[in-house]
Length: 607
Image (cartoon, rainbow, N blue to C red; front, side, top):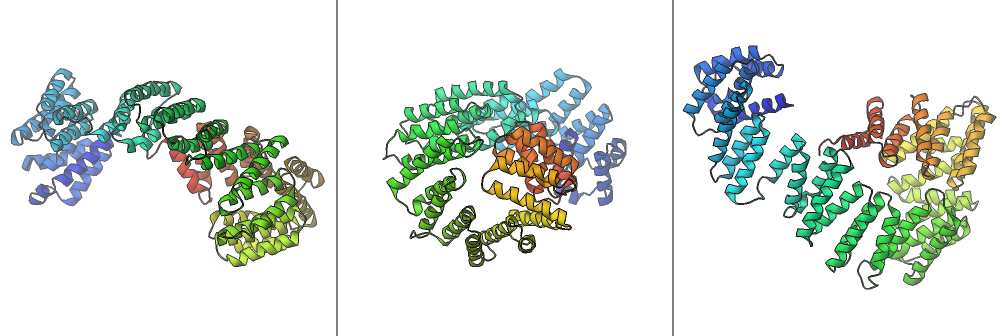
């Protein structure tokens, strides 16, 4: 990396001195390219032979960096010293040459002489921002990062403003992996540059090694809060720091204390709760919403908090292994909200959530059917809302044993929204319904059409279903095994996971030579993920990816493994491994682009 920095600096110097080169071109373009190639390949002797011709005739500044560094690499210190001192006499105003001379003394081991030069140059800094930056960049070019930092800090004193050079110092501290100084610079800068918060939140986890680093940072944040008690950015930073340590209740405590101290309306807290939810800290989110509700109905966040409180409880109750009594209480809460606020476009979300509870968790599909049919009659709904309601109603018709009604609804939405995302979704649901019924030819035909859908997710699902059907209808035995698999899929659709797993396990017993093993494994893994049995799901997905390297589900399995290890099993090393394997082995996968983004993020690239 150091060689690259010097090389890039050389190219920049060439650009800065382009006019000099044009007036007095020392070498042909071919020779210039050769010099660059020799330097890049570490063939310094060959580079110096060509460069000496330049300095023998013109002492051309544009080639100084590469010539000087080549001489240092070859330990030709006398030539380097003679060259740089000559240039110092010719251009006494150019601060790069004293820095280069100091670098030479460093290379020779005379640190005292080098530091004397460096300190003297810094002490002569004028009150000129450009010249301060120029000197610091000279230190950086010659890899004297500590003196680059010293230059910027001296520049702040001279200019009388500690807000100067923040970005430059942050970059140097990050490059050096100087955690204490990087932390302090962010803490100092955020008071006046709160827009740096997202950058700090992205960069610090890359250089932090363990919880001790977060705890050290926490001490610094708390000191800033004592100094600036009303500065929201430090509360946001402290909240983030607690979340990184999975200390969600501590984060909430700080947010509530800030809200009370500043007599705020709860906006900062309300916005922070989404972070709790994103991290599956649902219990903490519920406490936060309940606190906001104590502010009363006149508070602007009262109704949004009540809505999000119910939705958070919904997320808790419908994952893992739901408890019937809790589900019934949740359904009553949604009904209460509808009774208090009426059934209208503003409460459509509650109608849909309540219908979903009735249909798939309380097994009261008739209530869900009635609720959705009534919702379709409400005024003021957009065409998209109506289309989505019809799709939900079509699904419920399947539960109430009205497949023909479901088919008609899907077809209606498909035609009304032809070529649009919701129309493609309707067509795919129709294909799935045909699949459940064992009408494989019709289902496959629908999937063939959808393979060209604009939505990549729909197109991929349609392709997978089409391949599944095509590969498993070649013989009567294959078709019968596929029918059992379709029955298992229907049980999953009805949210009967235990029965679905039993049906999946029975396929191999009834048809030992079936070709559905990888599809069965993928389906089991999905059931286990929904039940929060993440390690069991990962074990199945690993076996799938190892045993079926050319299967239609393998890239999907690798992506799910990466996602599970990143978000649920907290193993970043394994997450990177599976994302990288997907990128390398299945570059054409629809998951490849997202896997690449996730892999780079976990590795800390581009932050």
